[in-house]
Image 1 (cartoon, rainbow, N blue to C red):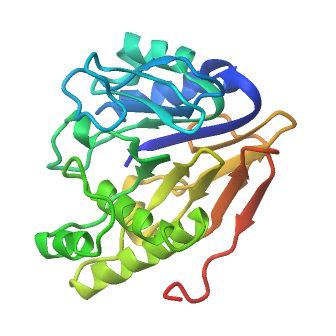
Image 2 (cartoon, rainbow, N blue to C red; image 1 turned 90 degrees about the horizontal axis):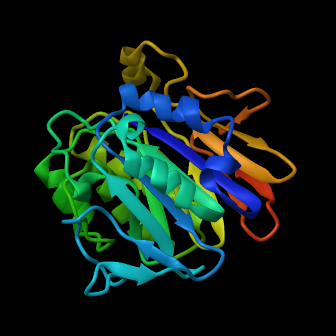
Image 3 (cartoon, one colour; image 1 turned 30 degrees about the horizontal axis):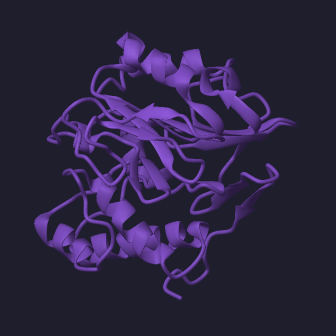
Length: 284
């Protein structure tokens, strides 16, 4: 169970300014969601940018010195293991993050999962950035079945990266929103085929250089243990100069909720936002 915050702004602006009203109550939730944090964004212009904390797995965007040049088509990501509210690096990240598209993740690790940078959201594959709020029962046969499908290979050991793996697989065949919906449907079916419960929640924020998608799916029976009926609600608001979407726990006056198994799609180019209905036949 984690917290998500995403924003698409009309003009390039620092993250802590783009969500000036929301960032402090959001950050305060790291008192509970204290197992690390991550910030991801797409720059509007070339600039120097650092990757994760030392020891993070290097990918194709790291030079010998651990520094890369930003690119408006390539995401910037910063991740740390300390609680956001206690982290100087977090404050630096939300001030440094600047672009039309930005997201923040506060992690509360599932029981038994180690606290490692490789397990810290957001994750990325090429120009796609993914952050998840939720969990599902995971056994080795299920992990093997998902990896056999040929999507993105995980860096760490989280269930979240397996969901992301399926998204990248379906992304090869269609648009991002449909890929997320199909991946969620396939994952739910695989859980049942392996004798497990349906996923507790598959809420996520996913962004590419062109759009941000927010997806909501949860099982009320499992979510009830948190004693908050809106724990897995994802809510959004369309303003003149931004669209914001976030988990609960921040001021959300005038917000609408993303429906169950629906996907909110926000376009970077013109700030247009629309909701994709749940798939009638997820297998098609």
